Image (tube, rainbow, N blue to C red; front, top):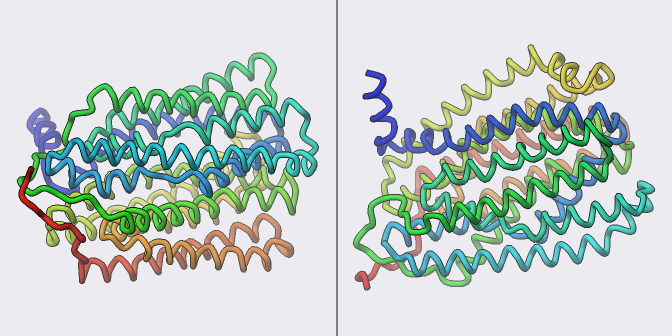
Amino acid sequence: MSRNLLSKWSSSEDSLVRVFRNSSWLFSAKGVGAILSIFYLAILTRTLGVAGFGEFMVIVGAVQVLAAILKLQTWQAVVQFGVPYLLAGQDRKFRKLSWQSFWIELLGGIAACVALWLMLPFGASQFNWSAPVVQAIMGYGLIIFLSVRSTPIGILRAQDRYRGNAFGDAIIPIVRFVGALILYLTLPSMTGFLVVWGLSEFISFVVMWVMVWRRHDMHPLQASTVAVEAPDRKEFLAFLLFTNLAYLVNVVRERLVVVIVGFFVGPAAAGLFRLADQIANSLNRLSEVFARPLFAELSRLFAIGQSRELRGLFWRSLRVSAISGAVLFLGLLLLGKYMIALISGPEYLAAFPILLLLGAATIISLAGLGLEPMLQAAGRARNALFARLAGLVALGALLAVFLPSFGTIGAAWVMLISAILTTVILFISSRAAIIQPRARTQRPRPPQ
């Protein structure tokens, strides 16, 4: 009986089953990452101290924000425009799209390297960084910016190869855990941790491309008999712009707040805030596990015009994510304080109220995790961007009021309010897209 169920699971073409099946591969990687991150987070917090940990996270957060601003994420464009090519058996066009995405991502990374080089002196004077720390930050930034990871992620997801994607993702926490353990047993330092974090990104970048080139002829599904024309430049650039602006807003919301707290309240406050944020983000990783395959599946359904199945998948996924979010928050409420004490020690227990607020913000986003992929797959990426921008504007305005008066707890309340506003707008826009789906602007022609 169990063999029969396993066979049905592996061969079913039900949309939600396909999403869960692909999610299982990503969940395996994220599961490894979640377990190992507890250990390397414990090493970080206990060896660097509250202020040192906060300073380290300010550095990492600032580099990630700079990458989000200048280094374009291309995986969604590869999936959105590449899946129809693969369904039509147009491998040459898919390869051309992939190379185009590669160069877009790389050129943005080069621009980010220049920006970091220009900005480093200001950060060094603000935090009194030594020359070795500055060199380590520059090296970490170079690796982050020049590692073209988003394009191979898109290729693997468009080809329904989530196993390779999961393997590449799992490398990062494994390298960080091993490197942090070696540092803990030898000479732990901020410079050493930056080297380890950069090395993990570089090895993952190499592994991703190895996974792409191992089997680059696989199609996600049976090919259709209708050829697909390439999107015009305006359509492609518009999609790339809107998805990246939405991604930027999300990164700014998650990372820039830590940087702001570090600059205006202090590294120790940033350390407490980031610890709570790191634990809350472990829930966010679970949402990404489900949301990324969901976007690929929604793109496939839009490409083949299955509107009824599309609506069913959307509402079913929304129910699953809402129930999961409620269970996760209950666990956070009951176990959050023990998690903080176990991971980082009693001196970090002041982060518990912050953890509850940030956890609630993350879980609200988790409850609506299918909303943004739905809008992007429907060709309404600008609606998703509007929702993110509205949340970001509210975040910035409220931070100016709450942060000076209430410190880190005020910043956490602002994150929660911003998450609620963003999710409400996303839900309203997604419901409209379900009721009146917009056809893709493709002109079928006879296969060549």
